[in-house]
Structures are given as C-alpha cells and as structure tokens.
Image (cartoon, rainbow, N blue to C red; front, side, top):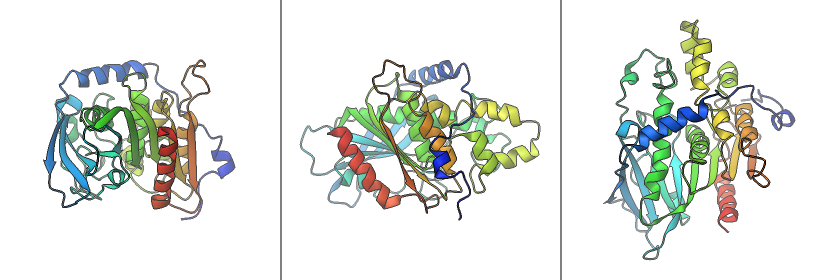
Length: 339
C-alpha cells in the first residue's frame, strides 16, 4: 500500500474540524451514572491455563445495563504474597474477543497484571469471544457489521455500550486484591486503541487510578475524515450505509460526535504513547494524528505543563503498525512512568 494520506510534516499539525457536542460531558456523566447504578459484581474464577509461570482467572463483571461481560486476568505466578501489581487493561481489535485462556499473556510475562476485556457481540473473527450484546438495538436495520448498529440515536449506538463496558473493566480490574488500583495502564490496538482513547477521556475526573494510555494505531477517531478517505473496513461500513440511507448523513455524524475519540481525547490527563502507520488504509494516519493532537487539550491552564504524550510513527507499515517493535517501545515508556 503506497502513502495515500497527508505528508508527515502536515500530519504533525493536523487537527480535525469536528466540534464536540455542547452536552458531551453531561451525556457521558448520565450514561456512566446509570451504568454504575448496577452492582459491578466482579468475579474472578481460577482456571487451568496449562502454563507454569502465569495464573489466570476467568472474569465476569457487569457492563452496560448490568449485562455480564467476560474477561481474563493473568498474573505472574511468582508474584509475592500480598503484592499489588500495576495492571494493564487490554482492549481488543474489531471483530475479536478475549481469545483462548492462554492466547495472550505477554503483559503478565513482563510482570504486570494483565486484564483482557471481551468485546460484546464480537469474537467472530481474529480471536474468540464469549460476551453477547443483548441490547434491543442490536437487531436494528444497519450495515452488516457493528459500525451502524443502533446509529439512529446516541442512546442506542453500539459503541455507547462498549465504551461503558471499557470504563467498568477498569473498575473490575481494580477490584482484584492482586492489583494496585492506583496504577492502571490502558492498552489496545485498532479498535482496542480507540477504546483506550475513549476510556482515558471518560475516566478523567470520574475514576482515579489511570496512569498511562497506550493507543496503538487507534480506530474510532475523526469519523468525518475517516468515512471520506478510508478504503478498507470497518469505516466503509458507515459509508456504505449512508450510500443507501442518503438523507442520514448529518444525523449520523451528529450521533458519532459523541463517540469520536478526537472529542473524548481532549479530556484525557494520563500520559500517552500513540502509534501511527503511514501506509495504514484501515486507520489512516491523519485520523490518528487528529486524536493525538487533541489529546489532553481540554486540560485547564493551571494543569502545570499539560499532558505528557508521544507518538511513534511507522513509515512503511500498514495497519499492523509497529507490532513487536512497538511493544518494546511501550515497555520502555511504562518503565519511565512507573519509575
């Protein structure tokens, strides 16, 4: 895939033209208050993972509407009794679920608690999932995918439910006695990266403990530009939906504004390490830079020097991004944060 987006020099200063809805904050205050009215009911059941160096727990907690959401919690088996570990809350890419019990334990191998959130209604591609999406809007008329499910209203849009799940996953991770609730790291690739950005923004001022965000080639950023220029899914699901629903463009963008990572990133305060790939035709680099450049920009002028943030650019990569190279970069970044 050749370079098709803006040159890197322009990306460095690119900002989205999207405007946050005036009631963005109150909408999410109400949404999260409704979700937190349900008991979290975080349960951790030890399971066999066939590994000698990792202990694994099958997790269930209450997400949007109190519906059960699954996950895994991996812990280093050689941890000290009573020790409380920093935790990496890991979100999954589009179509994937939490996977098999021992499929991804790398953060636990690095000495962290590793909490993997299953994604409701997904797990049909990539990695296996175990969480249904029982919401009535799941059966609405939509493109054959998830991007337009419930998109007629902000209340019913699919990602309202997923963002709530992601927020409550942090609370669930913090509930385990082996986890240090004051040292939560958010991590994810693609859709997972988009959930990192959203959760970093939504937890700021609402939930303590998030100390770092690692959005890797994040999805769900700068919807207006992404819909216009992205040649490869999932963003084209929205374009294809609008090709048939020709009178729904403005109303659709109005709904998506409440879920656009660019708008939510402004509220984030945790130090962040982004990544972007210049040949990415799934999450174009301009949409990633729109989010990066907005990240932390809503902080008050009294907030010292502002939010610490860095971005790693992989010039010759598509949506795979930096992969194993970037994980090393993340480990170094976290060592600096944790001291």
